[in-house]
Structure formats: structure tokens, C-alpha cells
Length: 170
Image 1 (cartoon, rainbow, N blue to C red):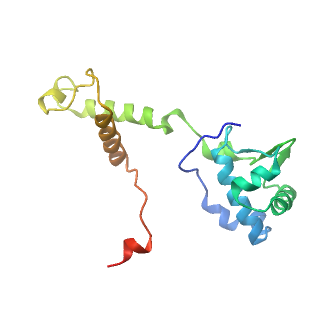
Image 2: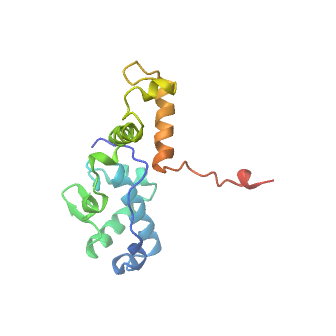
Image 3: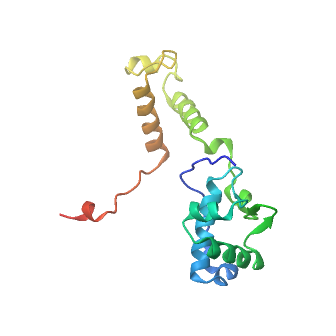
């Protein structure tokens, strides 16, 4: 399987009241969470290749015997399904609902169109009068980074917060 790095996946607040998760011991719950995170990075998402249990255990940083026991327990309470060498999270795809519009490229394009529609001249010539690089000219790498940062701010994407002790010291 090819691994694709994604910054996040959706996790629902109902998990704190889920009787299936409550049935897990603390160690099993931590393994479930790590396995869920790992499956979100896998292709297809929500599926873990378990053909080499020792490798999977190394990837999620747990003991191989603990992982095997936890997967058996999770299967019994129907948190995961095992088919051959794969471990599935049954409702993963429906809960993540990846859409093309969830990806940065389409979001950037939608935002560009929105800005053009809001401009007084409908986007025609307006960028020239404000000294903004026209889209028809080749854009440098730094200019593209600035546009992406602006799009993130406009879309309300937050940067990670530094919660280290050094950040809080006076």
C-alpha cells in the first residue's frame, strides 16, 4: 500500500459515549486510536495492510502481541473488520466523505472565482489597478506560497499552536 500523508481526519464527539469503545481496556483504546490514525494515512483510507503484523506494530509504536490481541478484541466488539491481510474501519469512508472540494487546489480556485465576482469590474482589469500579479503571467514559487497563505487565512485554516514550555515562559 502507498502511504499518503494527510494532516487530519474527522473524529466524532460521539466516540466518548460509544459502548464499543468503552468495552476496550485503556491499552486497547490507545491501540485503536493509533491504528485509526495510521489507517487515515493509508491508501485506501480506513484500511490497514496487516500482512506483516510486526511492521504494523512498529509503525504505530506498540508491541506486536499487544496489537494482535487488541485487533482480536476490536473485531469481537465490531470496531474493526479483518478480511485476509487487511484490517478495515467499517464506516471510515462515510465519516470522512472526501470530496474534490476538500483539497487545496479546488478550494484555491473557488476562492479566486469568488474574489473575481466580488470585485467592482467582475475581475476584469481590477487586479492590474491594485498592483496584483495577473494570473496570465508566470507566477514565481514565492508568489504562489503567498497566495496559498492568503487563501488559508481567508478560509479560516489555523496554523499549529506552539504549546511547548518555552512558548509559555516569560
